[in-house]
Length: 266
Length: 321
Image 1 (cartoon, one colour):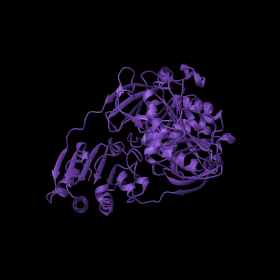
Image 2 (cartoon, helix red, strand yellow):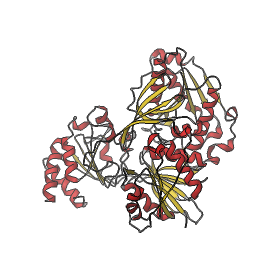
Image 3 (cartoon, chains in turn cyan, yellow):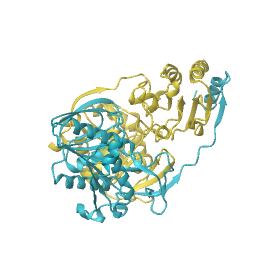
Image 4 (cartoon, chains in turn blue, red):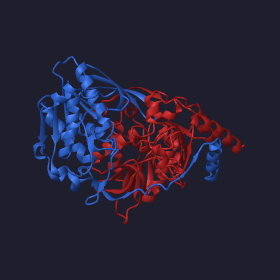
């Protein structure tokens, strides 16, 4: 099994996330970042599939795109146990939207496939910053592969993948044959913590850095100037005005219901 | 008049409220045409016409229910090709976003996801302007699509549906679905259990419970029922196995924008805020007076929810009778 896991380096949700006013993009450099939490489930799923595979030479390649510090996301995945990394780093990528990002990732996956067919492309269900949840579907579209996404249980038997998708209105069982694109939810597994050994070993694992030119892509295809959509303006939401807080001294419920009635909710 | 395609959200022909919201928004941009997948378009047409749908494109291809996402995207792309709409509005549920994503790639169009508002552009030819709420609701962003057709997914509860008469003429559309789109086979589909409560993302009032329930959701459910509300849960409660994942509110669960959100025993971590911060009115009940949820509330009670909620349930019931 040859598995590629797409991961994203995102601004830490507990830090002060913000926009860069000069070009209305997400500030990815001036804030603390980390491997998107939801991508840890994808890395774990990839490792589990590789470990369960009869093919002893199973390889997990972690793929990311973004500025210099995005390599932190690759390193974390390597520490967890992925075998090698690819980082598409190019200044021209800055400001890429989901369409451009999926183009870069799909092209990189095709290039990785030149040295051996990629059987599974794994993604998290969404990033924790843009949280659009569309890139896995776009990758399936661009690569012409089956899309088995937003699944919370995965079974691999040879090249047949069966998965449980907890949809909005129904729970579905989906089946497809590799090569395919798979995205997993935070219900799918329990991501492992890097061991000390894993952390040491990661330092020796190969990480290739590719530019757009390496992928045969032109700067006109990606980045802010080529984006398919544009942020016209952004505004920080005004802080909510301080509400009324009462301590329950036996009358908390009455005061609560009084408030609900005053707001016409009952 | 400019045509706007609206993807209909329905369960076995019963049109959901999100569809009337999308039709209402579509009328700001042009003349809405509903796109209905599956059988039963004729039965659904009156409900679509009531909110201004001039046409109902009925796509009843057997591949649509048999394979995941891809056939719908392909069919929609063919309809976009033949009708050249100014915009396509899609409901923001997981599958809707995926359909929209593939449609954007297929048609070389820009995509905006999770809009909470859509307005017409400044001039007749200008693309619609969307509003999104991002970074756990801490920023609002206005954006436009700059290439191709504007493809926009819209969150439930973004607008109050307004009725307007539409002809809702049903036009059957035949589509050609490629073999590539028929590769992720749906072996079985079990509809979600009906609770008798409103759907979480559509509900006007949501009462949700967290770690502070200690696993006992009875008082949360009873209070919700007294208000006619939906029930939600925090990630902590779901991870503990106290409530099903399909009710989880937050970054990795559902996003809700109800008129009233009541958080019981939920501390209000950033992951949770991401799913509820756009609620109009927020109420919290929590033992810990330093819980971050109190920074968001319009009204808060510091106290034990197992004491407060049953008493409040009685008081609401009494008030209503």
